[in-house]
Image (cartoon, rainbow over all chains, first blue to last red):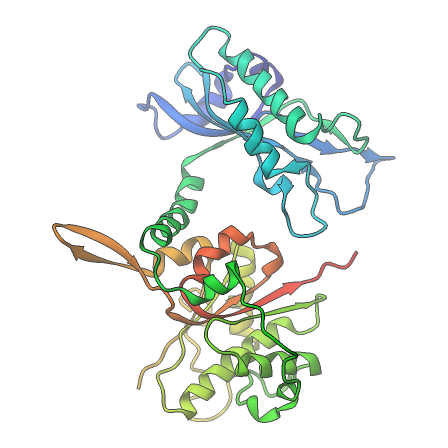
Length: 311
Length: 72
């Protein structure tokens, strides 16, 4: 939802936005929202958006707030978007660091939001936060300009999303269960010496494949050999440009694990494929439905639900 | 003989599936299936924030991460 400029100046939502905020919960006194008061857009140059890998829209300040029936916004928590702050995967666009934000918020908490000039205090806090962490960005950055209005979103959904993660992290901290893989990720034990490169040539480690017509590239086969040789608590990380058979490799990894468990007479492995967003996950499901060959034996086509939904 | 599917989920919804509830004293406690998944495949690993994926790594024995290098 867009928040018009006037609302950002006064802290009161206009009726048309308010109607949408309270839609379906007209009896509620307040509704929790998230607000992005400062939204910057890439400047277009001669009518065309410029390339360069920078994001089109940047909204650095994120505010958790309550909106009451009169449209008054009461900020509860004010911070900068985590995905704009270093440390980030290399090369990603960032405007400051998490450390700088933590330092600022410790020294300068959000002022009390009950007084008459609370909204002005809040705007001041936003400005000071951006100045402290991002050295006044986007001032001096010729690529971005403010679009004036802000964004608003109802907050419940996002809270539910991270709830499960926070609960699990709490559990990890209190119970300290044995989780070797996580331990290895967080505090890696470095292997001593050079790994045995004969492993990647061992074709006998490849026991299953997902499709009779689509073979794997040489280096993908090496990955699967390493996967077969890996033990509990190990991570195999693969990087590659698009279109070089990553999905085929994943399917082949699944097929290989199934076959090797069957040969050992064990229960089949429990395999989970996960990613961060629904699109990536849908891609995996599509690939399973499409690229896993059905075969022609008595067990042919044992892939549940062709539409992928129940798979 | 047991058959197991290959489960596909987002990291957010996965955690909700990998727990169980048991009676602990007078109340119900939520427990997680730590060190349970034989292979955790992370697709498009470059798009996944470490803190989002980290929790799920506690549930798995091995991981295969697959990332697409964006061409400049």
